[in-house]
Image (cartoon, rainbow, N blue to C red; front, side, top):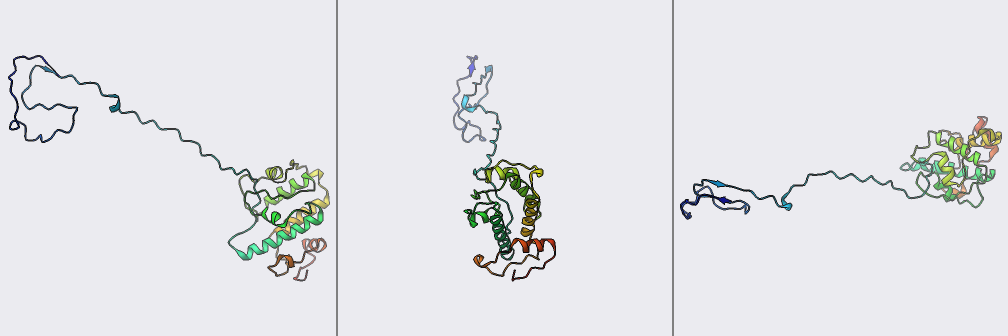
Amino acid sequence: MKQFDTDTDNIQMSEDNKPTYIKEQYNNNCQQFFGPISNCTFMMSAASPSSKQKPNVAKPKAKAEKKRCGKPMTVKYYTHGNNGMLMKQRKRVRQVFNMWNRWGWIDAQTAIDDFDAFFEGEPRHCNITWTASSTLLTILLQELLKQSYIERQTGCAAKSLVKKQFGKTANSDKSRLDNISEERIKLTLFVLDPKNHDLIFQNSDDFSEIQDVQDAALMEIFAGHLRSTKGI
C-alpha cells in the first residue's frame, strides 16, 4: 500500500475498536483496516508462481497393449462344463487322431496329448508334425472352421494356423487336392460332428480300451449304409 495523505490522524486501533465481525485473520496475503481510509492507492502484488492455477490438460491415454503370448491359437472344439459331452468329444478326437495316423497326415511321433490340446481353443504350440501336403492342411482347416461345432475365435484363421501352428505355407488351390483326400476331409468333419449319433464308440472312460473304428466301417456309416453298434 502506498499512502499519500500525510495529515491522517495517528490513531492506533485498540482491540475495542476492532469490528466485532472480525475475529481472527487467516489469510496472510491480505491486510485488514479498522478505521477510515482516504487518499490511498492500493497496489496488489502479482501472484506467486506457486499460486497460479495451471489449466487442466487431459493427458493422452496410452493405448492398451494387446496381450500377446507369442503362442499360436488352437481350434475351440471341446465343451467344458458338460462332462458327458466332453467325454464324447474326446473320443471323437481320438478317432480322428487314429485316422490321421493311418493316412500318414501326421508324424507317428505326435503325442495324443498334443493332438488333444489342438482342440482346446487356447494359445499353445501343439507340436503336431504335419506330413501331408500344405494344400490338404489348408483346405482341411478352412472346412473345419466353418463347422457349427467349432467356436469362432479372433486370430484363428486357417492361414494363420497353417503358418504358426504347423510351420507351413497356406495353399487353398482345390485343384491340387485328389478325390481320396477330399473324402477323408469330409470323413474327418463327420466324425467330429456331435450330431452324428450313428458314430458310437465303446462305452469306456479308459481311452486305451476304446476300439478304433476302421476306415471301411466309417465310410459305410458316412454313406448311410450301416448303423454302428458298440461292437464296432
